[in-house]
Length: 303
Image 1 (cartoon, rainbow, N blue to C red):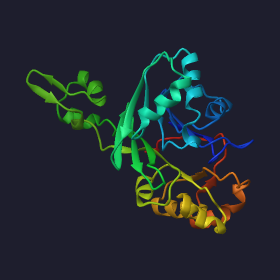
Image 2: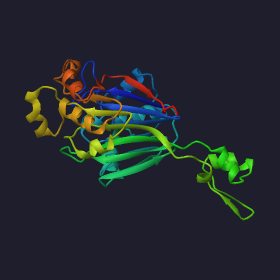
Image 3: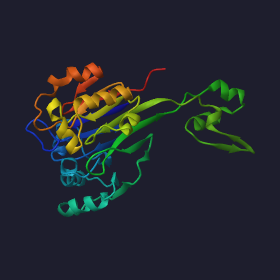
Image 4: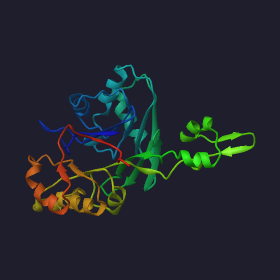
């Protein structure tokens, strides 16, 4: 199971009932936080989560509404007796930007490791899955992220019997080990079926529509996409500042065909996003207007 929570849905500045855009994903004891604007740690607490299990932080870019909440979050993590290293992922300049913010959070009881993304697309593995960073089109270097959980094939007992593999090796092969005994080599592919469909969440904000977004959100279980503006008269503003319209997000979803899309990163001038969703659902029916604290548990397909 992959647990996803949209902690905040605001762009540019926090509002009285809307925190800045941030997403938390939890899998097998690991929490992955994407973006950390002002108020993120409050939103995290209100949603019922602790900062301590956050093992990875991903940053789309370094505008203040996506990273200004980091010093407080790091201090909260330090005060929770955390000692495990924290991996941070983001565009070039990550270590410099975080170092500057840490002037007010200089002493932490854990190490920060940095992974600066330099290519148009890069994969970062974690136990059980990987994060794919992909470049989008904002007025500064900006990335979207897909978090994917792998799922191995089923163990084929009949294949193991046919190959004469001793029963004592079955469990080890099922868990990916290669075994060599008495000059005989047994490999997992001898007993495992084809890899099954896993789970995938794609998150993209602060960008004009790009092919990279549609490609990386293809067949996702959940696609969380910027919907900065809804009204047609804001289109020139979206072009100027390289943001996205509701309608454009829906068109990307129609290309990518995720199971569901949530809009996020609303303009402070947009008070009731739901009233504009009919146009969005006319293009992509499985669309929802994201709300702070909105969450879902994604489960593997039954087969």
